[in-house]
Image (cartoon, rainbow, N blue to C red):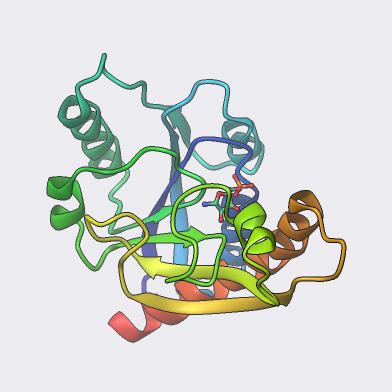
Length: 191
Ligand code: GRF
């Protein structure tokens, strides 16, 4: 069966994108990463993708015009025949129209056990809240930020004396295992 064609949107270092690219190399992986798009020209992930032989493009924002930027993204996705989008550290909030257009075909990874700690600074917030457990969630994206249905989660303990950085590193290692698995399961279920 043909692999599902996945486009990845990033804004930064792209370590989750790299984990998806690595997983997609396996013959039995049900998805292929066909392009990586970044809203930032300086995203380290663009170089990582290029080095892995994946078409990687900077799609610059259009002076405060979200719809215009998203239509440039759409054009790039169409050019690469993308069927499903994986957000991986993409730092812009997508418009309700874009989310509706890609409904059921737009997934994200978020570094918390949703519905706990949507938004930013999740690791510091988990520590401040006294959480004993923290982690990451792969979820479908809807118009509400970090609100879409959760597909899979990975849990880590919050240890005494944890700093946000130490906790983030523990979660990130789990993200790299979780995202490829959750995406593969989701793609396989949709077939
Ligand atoms: C990850 O923690 C991810 O969960 C969040 O942003 C971070 C991106 O890291 N959405 P990377 O660019 O994948 O290394």
